[in-house]
Image (cartoon, rainbow, N blue to C red; front, side, top):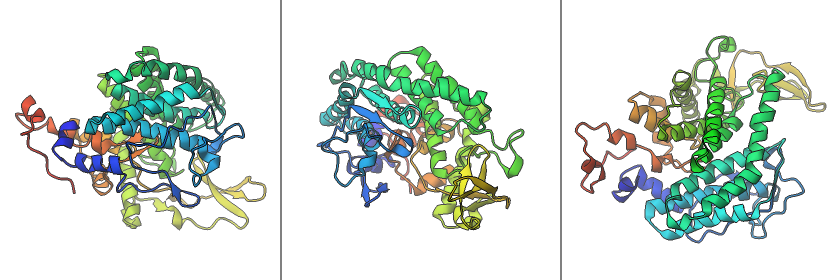
Length: 442
């Protein structure tokens, strides 16, 4: 990465500029037209560390949460716990660390460490463990563990890892263990269908990243096991008995829920697989390379939507705008356990009928930077596979930015493995300033 940044090789050159300035990053708009600033400033306004994180479904605070005094007035106060933790500080910690590696400016590293240390020193209470608590913990843990992994050899980081570990072990990890060790087994025992999803992939990535950071082999192995269970169940569609309703290989349990959350699931799986690859373990090939058709199918769906051309969709799929009206007095909701759209009575909020017209409707279709570049770099760059839909998606949506616990793949990974495939390549050719640059992406 550093060689390609220094020599203005694309996409790293543009990706670095986007990281620092936020230029070209699509805003994530909240009510009131407010959005999280996307730049990586040397004079970061945080940290926004809070003593209590207590978050219900949809990221909404309980009444136990006290928003930081310097939390932006225009930002939604009912989400201040989630936004302060995940979308401000966790994201900024990683962006600041990567900015340090890309520029060499010590102030970025100092900002990253200041953010993590503030949370480790301030946060004492975490919930709601039966609602969003475990997911918020997973997002923060996966991101900040990566931050410290990038900086762990820097003298300025001495002591930060131990302080972070005490915080995670005492406050965050019990939330995720509750979800992995109690909520999930209980639901499996009750026969809950299609249980594994983006929550599990996020927690698996945290377990693996944190296990490596703290040299905790049992924690890492627990993450690998959860990764394997999640991928096998999440990407089972189109195989064996899961072809009913025209389901095809590449679909996941959340595809018909929405493409937005499907990418959340892929992001955790891809980044966990990359973590394992760096440890000499191949998780990318799990379930007969199930990630490849999943990425290709969802890339095709997103490209069709961005082109406003439903004819590009695979047979049997339609966009949500083409869904027939719900019966009078009802509204459509997707039931992930039944994998069916149901009409819910708007008074009783009870299901009264299923949508049975034979089409698979797609909602929440948009591009998110959930590891597409990392996966493409592995399957195409390292292994020489073909992923034309993913390549085309990336060509129209680069560079990847940072969001939640994933992103920045255009800066960190894009095109790097391909360099190793050039015939006769030598160490000097890769590391020398005279090395030839690949063609510009466009």
